[in-house]
Image (cartoon, rainbow, N blue to C red; front, top):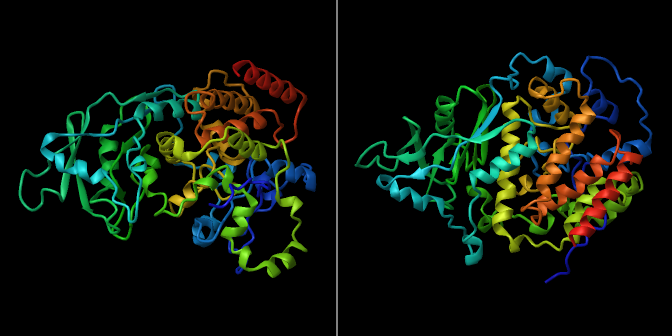
Length: 471
């Protein structure tokens, strides 16, 4: 077994691919700052020297854009960036109001005895050898998803949908018995189409658009949005192999399937568990994925032009702290497969709900609102909102905030402290949440441009004293 990676250098700029020039052209630093303006205007001339840019990038690094990542090939994702100005003026926005502000999460549907055969559809059948421990991981609970959303979308109330949710028969007998299943929410039943999976990993999949139709019909009158959780594999259209999550942003409903996040499928999905976020920003890992091991001569020529120091995070910065905090805990994903599975689903639910606030996919930074081309890319992405997307949520929640005059930095710190409390809790030994804790501590301590403040030094000292008391 090779020695464990020490993640000694942290990549904060777009990855340099060895054999090809990346087709993704990231907006310049000044353009990214303009993307945070509420009004349409040119760059205002905020300091943008190399040291300022690097400090900022160590808080909000660039999307990695490894080979075959979504930003590497999808033209819409590469070119259509939703800035704050366009977001605030969008006519399709449906922010929470005092009467419609609750996020509802539906329980994973029960399975009625009449359709007991669909229980088998939940169990994966991955190719190759899989340990019993991986297969026995417990899928995330709706109650735990609610806990995370209360922190992530603070101060919105988050509740379990009170109605019964269950799969029931749609047709009684005959050859179409497995072709359709009914989804009951309260007194309503919606027909859900099913099909065999293309890759045979699960027996059958559910059609997610049908599930979202059921969610629209069940949206409570006081709801801002509704999340449907399912343990079955899902697909969107006939060309799809599978789909883990989907939102109808205008209808304020979304759906997340836990199936493909099952730890037993990691090898099949080519997930490197030692390089999930935040360790996905490990420079050695990025270079390996980009083909530099086979192109050392090309790497040497390129590094004569590209400053390696400018592309890596320094000690004490939020991204460095995220990796160091995770490593200091000595965490191994295989020691808590339930937590690993939960962290993946929680992150995706927060992403899909972002679409219910009408946030588009993000191409400015590494961000929870990035699009993804597959599960392996999914687990490399961060749980936080970037600077641009965070401002969108700040404005979306203005109508329900207790202090309407609270400025964006005060709001950011308040929300981050609630998230930090969550990451200090029972899930704090899960790699993603431990890394998020380290990132949050350093983010709270720094200014909008990423410079450590005097108040921040006091905050970090208080955090360190708290840790020592707990030890």
